[in-house]
Length: 453
Image (cartoon, rainbow, N blue to C red; front, side):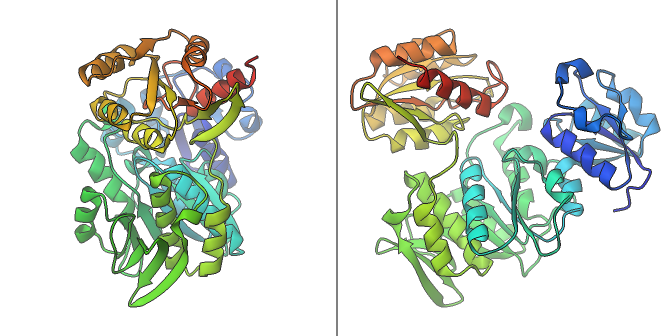
């Protein structure tokens, strides 16, 4: 990809936009920086781009900038049907996404992971397996470290493990992971994608450019993914927590095993996997399948599975205070993710639910809360609080109240929790109504919990 002297409009100056601009500079391009926010709103976040060839056009209408650029590069937060994208296509301006451009300029091999839930845990776990195998490994993408930042430094002998969202998959063209895993698909982001059919179609694009010698890792227990297998070009490696597989990773006699072309390897006892919950066992199986497909030796996979402690903001134990365990699951940004967190609770739990409205139906979660018997009380917050309270009542659950600030929510949880029980933040919603992102929500939760006296 020859970018020398090309004027490229970079739309969206969050982390991925900044990294994309730095990568463009590295390749001799002239980035034209655009965002709805004006420059003063960014504080010192853009300092690395001052004094460079970048042209700052922040706060201006990006449609008015299209006549003088060779390409429009969009960040994941910019929908593929945004007015500026449609205008660019009408004018014949090439449109690409940050992930697409970065992958085209990346050095070394690339593997990728997507799914509604479990992406960050599986991506991090996969990265640890490769590091333990002695590979120079980069973990990037939707996980919070842009792939553009990796593309500036990666070598031909490196390998990148990329967490991929449906937002990023909207704008790919040549994105081609050697091994790719799709963990699960449940309702999410319908406020952007419109229908489940469109959401599934986007997730399937993860495998779009794979060839017959590439490997597609799929959850055999997910009916949508099982059906998808017949549409893909790469070799299929299934993983399953509940049934045997012919090619892939599964549980047999309490052990994680890998089967491929008639050869079987035992990895470890399933109960040796350190990260808790049945959903994390699925994540471990997916990572095992990917690692085996890449030729990582079984002892290294085993060592990683029995020593990996998980990721921040995902069922993360914060503190035991007055006999109550406070748990940060701010990464629980959709219904299915919070269902998995609820299923992991083994003691009476006060649950904080609610946040930004993504047009979600909470009834499956409400039914799980009733069925689990472990959720003793719920504090609802944010834009969705009223809907959550109503649907909980419809499901026959009445021990719920609203809080109008995060501090109030934690105070109410503290008053309802019992010694030996838990307080769980797993909102089943995005965070943008009250916080910068789920990481900000999780950090503030931990700060407030650690300040309890």
